[in-house]
Length: 533
Image: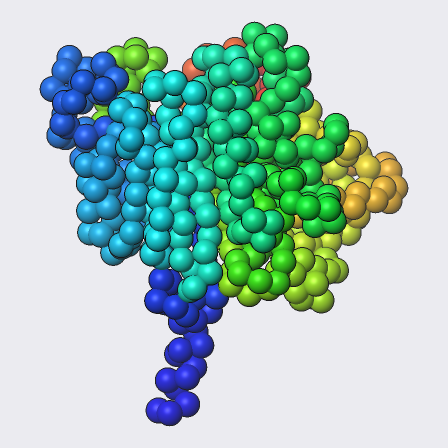
């Protein structure tokens, strides 16, 4: 028994169970724009769409669903500190805390920026004590305050600046007022102060590049708030860890979006355009050996399947394309982001564990046994058997296939490669590679037939055939299903609805891949993949 107790204590310490009690060495910080969390108390500042008992149906039933849904995301996110945006009031925040407590997640400490009567506000929930709070005013009375809190992490102070800048209904000059107020306050911090700039900045992490594409935003002669005023760029280059840690002084800060593959750098999908308005930006002092430190490469977005509907972020649903009655389902139009921090000295991920510095050599089949998220795995002789824009399918000889999503721009059809996989994702059940590096060309494969399914197996929906490519198969289409080889069938998905044939059509599919979207399905992406007989 004497040996068991210390072992239990070690486990609880490593798991962060004592968060806020003076023992935790590691903790998670997150941010989530919850999309208009309003209470039912009319005070004249709410949006017309959220007037309690109004024509658009904002009532107790809808509020309870909204609270339950947002609380379930936060509960699953399992953060020790979470910055929130678009919370109407302390009452709305308290209701959310109550729902979390019913789920077994307790946040003893919380604050909200309430000095201005704006419709929505920034807030923070914490399992660690909040020892100080300040509202930082930006611009006029109609602009939301930045919430600054000081949190005691086992005796070390951590400053959190929770932001919600002006939306892109206005030009960049509207966001510069927030950036200037934020930069002014952090300029007064000591160089060894540990702080995180967090929240919805309504700016891409690389806004200085993206906003040039839309002339109505650029009324500042190329100057952006998040990049040039807050100092996440140096000249024409984004501030990376090398610039951050070697700079003289502490003027530059580092946006953690740079920690993950470019294909994953988004938290909002606005009418098909993927944006990164939500950011977590850290100070140089989080890379030293005192106080709080960032856990290297721990940043990511939280994107479980249930936060998506039909490949779109499952936002809070309203009729009339988002302008009508509340339908009582959905979550938010933003995905949460998160990172881990520690009271231990900082060290780069490749130095923490010598095993991590060299990728593990695995087969594609081995990848299916891994958890989604950051990985460091080398795949040898993966042949590109399907290519469409930035997407591809690679397969090893006599092995399995896997889909590469938005990360295969450099790969070419029929070429064999050695490459390192850096990120995996499970999208509605389908395993996908979403990050690769160290791409090495091996050779061109001349016989591509041996990498495809050329003789139709009895069951194309077999899980072992996930992400495989079918050479040719004929059958009958009926109501979303493809019937082949007698009584066998599999779902069909058409990337372009215009390709969908009439019911009971005899069709032949060529060079199509087998995907998975809550169920196995053959995906038809191009007109040359389907022939009607």
